[in-house]
Length: 567
Image (cartoon, rainbow, N blue to C red; front, side):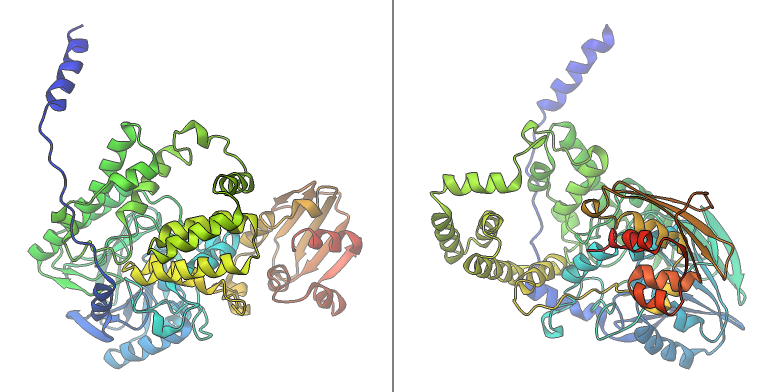
């Protein structure tokens, strides 16, 4: 009973405490974004003896660590072309063969230049043991949507003159100017920690979940040099990225930074933005950085527990001035507002707690009701145009959601939406949202050409595991074309012992990595030829005619199967 009396007393004490409003820092402006470009001056910096970082050549830095007779590369940039430019600079410093490549995580801007750094040798490629899974996931299962949203976020469809910088680097080279990926999959992986030596340099890798679940950091104990990957860079971190991502665990991210802090590094060489030196300086900056992340996490959870929904929390949460004023927490990449919503979703999922959100009206019905309430479609359009004229660009944009839901092809509503997007984009200092607005506006041009920045080529397809290709088939089944089908196929290969039994069953695709009797059609080919057909790089009819795919059994079932996977 004493405990029961203590709890209310505890809350009475704290509920009576005086509170002060949080003073927020000044928000950056587009001019601040322009000034931020100085962070990406093109150069190779020798951070300490034998450690060189190439900045400004790509979205991500590439790092050279010199050994006695061989070298190490940490992150490889994002394309063959940028990797070749950086490798030539590194070779001029030290032309020893590359014995090891380290991926700090799976993102393409760190991994897609690997073939260039590996072409003169046969290096081991170190990564966390989940990195291959994440590489395959982005390239395969969710490639179309990640490509589209990344294209908007990084402004890759915009003229180069409109892209000031991408917050963490000068520009995303993937998908620009016909540049090509050169991915290699990891050859040596670990789960928690690993130690090894390359060219007399002692290397320690630590699993450090943060911006990605497979993130690692590199520690060179004899040089007191720390390479944090994407768990630290000079901007507020992408605790959530608007291109889309698995949940980023903020508490785990803070813990990863703490592990790095207590190593007491004297040199900090991030994979984005410039290196830092000085043990005390680094400790102070990392402490501020982890406090910024923890503040967003802890205060989001506190407000969740008070019953606030994700939008309410995003509107309420303010980063205190002592954190927000840090040049390392300026919003040139991530946003506390977006991050708060991510924390809410990570703990509680999509439901905001409001019962009206459980089974809302279909969007078209909501739009028609809203239009009726506004006095008709023309009346709502006039309101939206008036809002735009008054500088209320966000409200004008939101009203076009209803207008275009009702009349998707209306030219006047599209033009208003485009104008609102441009106005919002031009005001933004955060490059992620800035280019998302401007790219979304560009997509409304009648002559807009889609830009698939992750479109696979033959080289990429060759390296992509056949198992991942088969998994990708599942999420490409079109129910309207397959609800009446029940087809079993068997795929075998002339250059491997693998086989896959595939069952298309009324809108669902089952894939098993072994032979199951009863298939109506058996397909034999090389793994590479089947991957080329499945990806659309090669034509199925041509493959059947020239014998690239050998077919026994019902060709009708085979064609029916493929017709169920593509629009």
